[in-house]
Length: 167
Figure: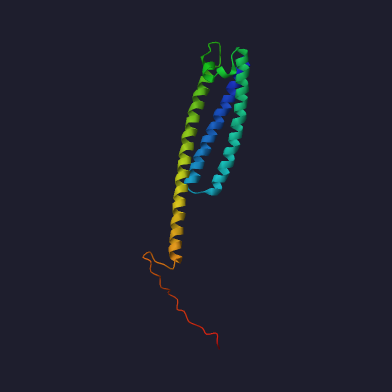
């Protein structure tokens, strides 16, 4: 049983390291978005995708370990949480697991905050870009229109000459 607890602790420590690395990527992503650095943003997104895949693999390992621990404790896997494991008196890793739980919750909260800020910045940037494009389009329409806003025909600055074809 101690081996399962130790394995779970190791997986959680790996998750903590990966989450901290992911937070750094989110900070870099913020810089890229705020500086309109598209090439760097593409690289960050690729790294984030890789991190997400690693997180999923670690989550599968954690879930598998929790099922094995629940089986040994004669509990339903759905009823066993990390918090409950930290409350078991016969768990020698309960302090370590409690610390991991605290770090994971803190990291998840930071990730949620940063993700929300990045989404908000992207939404704001997108809206600003749309407004700029709409303004450019309307100015372009005004410049090419033969009519002024008051309905008068704009005078051409080019002189025209009639050419006869009867020569």
